[in-house]
Image 1 (cartoon, helix red, strand yellow):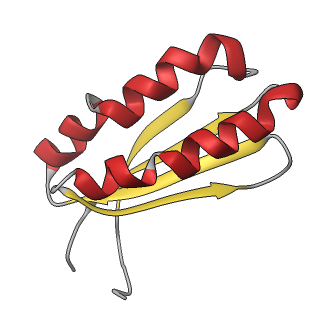
Image 2 (image 1 turned 60 degrees about the horizontal axis):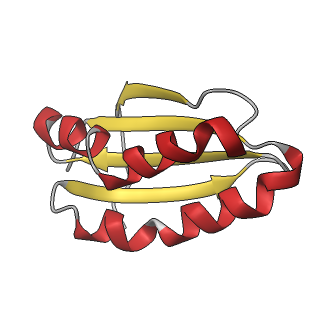
Length: 100
């Protein structure tokens, strides 16, 4: 298995800012690609106002670096204005995976 270190984030936008949050997540893809220790990165939408990010990392150091990187910083910067609640960001351990 390539990685056992992951993050799962849940992001709830204020209804009037949902499109901005979607654009922010789409725009974060290049930053995720630039992170060498980020193995996979997915941004998704659960409902009109609820979004998520799931990513995996080569090791714990990669996960920690990601949490201190530009995507997390951008999210925290806009959180008071765009989000209905603080983002929920949880470290997860990958138990099984099917590589692409």
